Length: 360
Length: 215
Image 1 (cartoon, chains in turn brown, green):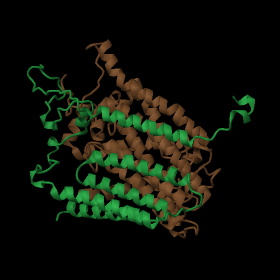
Image 2 (cartoon, one colour):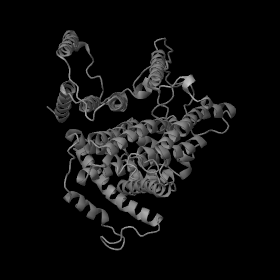
Image 3 (cartoon, helix red, strand yellow):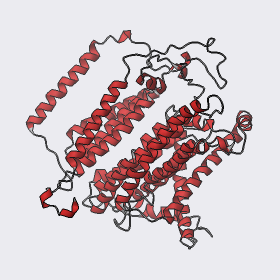
């Protein structure tokens, strides 16, 4: 019962934030290109532009090309959306405010977000169009490659935290902002930027949006889609943008903690005015994720698109070695540190209280 | 019948139907999609049984695996737009015999097992009694003092008073660590990867036909 409510709330959240992000994307694009963006639908800032577009998409004819494989063509959008939505089940929005309390939440999120690419590839293959097939193949090559450095980068803060439970990881970063894992040591600092690059690529956002590449492939994998099916791909894309930003926020940027409220005060708030604490921290968490999503948009409208070979080079020749180096460094750092400065300056490497290291 | 049992039957039946569809579908990419659903359904069963780690691993490994199957197995070898696959009568007969034998083996082992000797519940309801992935990681390195969370000494935020006082956990180094099999599997996979790269490499022209400047 509780899970059903949580699922409904999350679906609504994903859909509403997609509506907001699409409006924001146009506004950001407009401002960066020195124009105004949407101004007409719904007042001065074009607030209702996405709603108007949504109505237009609902009214559009649901077209399936004669060459398409009907079953795969219909299946693609749902698979893509399911993959990006399922990740939210394990994403903690505040202390203990999460649909599923999971011991391996981070691993679960990465696993289900990997299924999103399947929808894109089925759409590309099932459309029966060469543009779409090219887009799907590029997406497959890109995502399969970028998953590797992304997963390795995620391990760097996990080494520090000693757990995969996102709720616990956030709670460990309570207090002032130097507790955030991005500022924990040089390796986590670099891992944050590497992770964010890989995450941008795994959401197929520019400069890595080779799957769509409208200058070469018409619209890539969703060339043949129209109406509501097309909009499912966009919900999936914006949904996974928020989800990867949520992972980045939780792992590196202190989760729902503001970074200016001391840990004792936030604990007191949690115990005494729980409701206020939850509302405020959910707002803080969402705001942090929005900032990261905004950065993705900023990057999209600032940098030119890479070529497919450059995309693969970036991943396999640069990001992957960097990620491996960071993982190696992060695992060696506590050992080296403790043997060079024994008991003198202690880096806060935790074994979380529940899982003590067995005494040697 | 409670909700989770109903859910179990729904997921189990769905998985079984998808598995049958894998066999009878002739369109090869659809076949791969049914395979994906079968594997995802199995992951769902693991989640229902409380085996989160196993379920997530199943998803992570097999979704990627099926993906690579579709792309390399189908798209790179296809000659037409949508490929059909037809099995001959001999192949059907062979497949049915092997399938029935495997089914018989599983059914027999299920039938002859003494279920009454098993513990009440493999997965305890109390989270403190559960096994966590940490023990798995330790076992990989040969530390087989695998114990539920509650059995470990409770070292909380403050450091332990003195080592003599706390409950001792014996760390046994065992020869039956999983590390060696794990390494063997990794090396095996590496060999397969190199072999695949070798087979898929572009055919080079002979040195004599190449322009001299290229070497």
